[in-house]
Length: 208
Image (cartoon, rainbow, N blue to C red; front, side, top):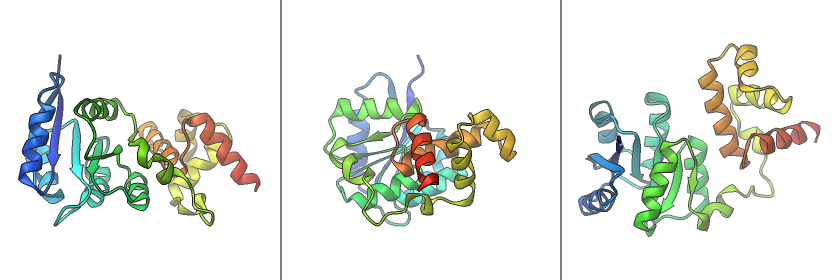
């Protein structure tokens, strides 16, 4: 059985080593590298080929948010799971909007952390339930669709019309994988649990 390859990114060496020791008690996980900040992690990714990046939100040089944004561009498909003590809802929303695969507080249990790594490796989104409500609840003045970029709005319009990903890809002349990634981003940004809920939400937004 192939183990899940994890790159640990934290500016504190003691925490990096502690995470390595904790994760390697799980037979399904292998820590393939440690980096002290986001830029070092980006340099290491081609070398160590991780399946998941586990990163602190607050680091010098390039923080967790910056790392997520760079990975989306430079290493699409590589999930970044953010681990931190900082539970501000705005930070969580920024990380998820940027494309983070999940957000966990640092007091997560060993089993919880290992399970989260397995979930994001399988394409899931992991969010600590203690901050999920605050992170995904829109503010009274929020205009969710206004936060979408042009390509996201184009895909959102076709999702609202009920088109599947294959037809959306044909309509917009995009790769099927690109459409799938945009739909995942829409689910995160608009706080919807699945594609059906997303389509209903978007359809309602169009009629308001």
